Amino acid sequence: MDLLETVKLSLEGLKSNKLRSFLTMLGIIIGIASVIGITTIGDALTKSVNKAFDSIANTAVQVYVKEKNSDYDSGDLSESDYFTENIINYLEAQKGRTIDELVYHGASGQGYVKEGRNKEAVSIVSTSAGEKNIFKLKMIAGRFLKDEDVIRGKSVAVISDKVLEKTYKVPAPEVLGREAKIETNGKLIVATIIGVYKYEEMSVMGQSLNGSNSTIYIPRTTGDRELLSEPRTVYYDVAMTLKNPDTIEEDAKNIVDDLNSKFYRDNPRAEVAYYSAKSQISQMNSAMSSIQIAIGAIAAISLLVGGIGVMNILLVSVTERTKEIGIRKALGARQKDIRKQFIIESVIICIIGGIFGIGLGTLIGLVGSSLLKARTFPSLGAIVVAVGFSMLIGIFFGYYPANKAAKMDPIEALRYE
Image (cartoon, rainbow, N blue to C red):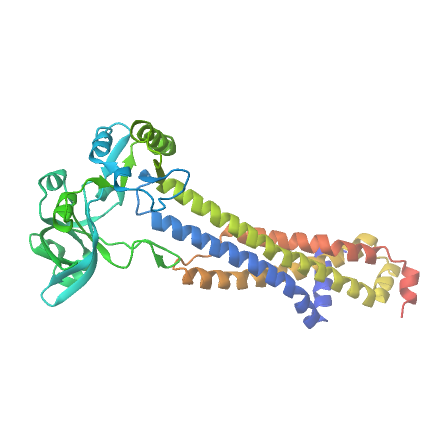
């Protein structure tokens, strides 16, 4: 008996018990749908994280002070434990070697930019020229802050296109040179607008990482002068980009070890630590992959349950068709023909269930990833694996019933009522 004829016989057997065939497929459908849906949502999460961190330079590192033997600053540190001007100057001297850009923020806060009756909430960040490269800011018009602006404490500002649209309502080039009136904590800062950048929200799973307000940038020295009642003596952290993208972790560790050795050796409470954008992405992706694998493994159990269901139904089918098997054997059907027919029935059930499962899993994945604001389709690899796994389940769980049918004694089978 050729393969095509065997497939036709198998399909006829399935058609004769449509409801039973569908219920048998259900376990496979649910299992495949779960695996496809979970892997798709996992891919969407990874895509969302990578997209969020894409707005930060991959060589970016943040160096900060924390309590010894703790992952974070617990609040027990004093002002004298943080970065002093002496430490900042030491880091500045490293620029051009391991360090490419160096940014340490001045006073920051929340406020509003007002123009006539228009008002837009903003985050005020006082910083230096390196901020543009660290956060990959794209200028639409004008320029970003320069070192000269910081040194001279100029009253200048860089606004976002969001502030431009909501407040000034003119083309970007036309706003250059106009005054930005910034209200914060009862104070009014007036600065000349020198540039407009494109605001891009960083978000993971639809949750903003940089707030819904866009940022207005002013020179660090200007922010300290306008927002602090006393001169600044310390900085809480320092952001930097490193020159060699291939040795980020090693170079960052060397910088931290150097600072701890030179400035914190005798400090009983505090030490310097760091985290890099690259390591953060890697850790988050690794954590999500582990979760994805764990949930996927649980979902895969339903595939095994579905496979057992296929085996049980085929055993029932073998019993019901005992006389048919006897007649076929009496007419010359070989053991391998009988075995092949039942294995093909099992494989067809699993493949059809797999196809429906892929469709349902794709729908689940699309809905889930859309809710996470990262619409994603299942990967071709996941679909191929799902179909292949369906076939393997069909062969594995179909073999025992098929073998049982193949080894039936034709005389005993013909006597069966």
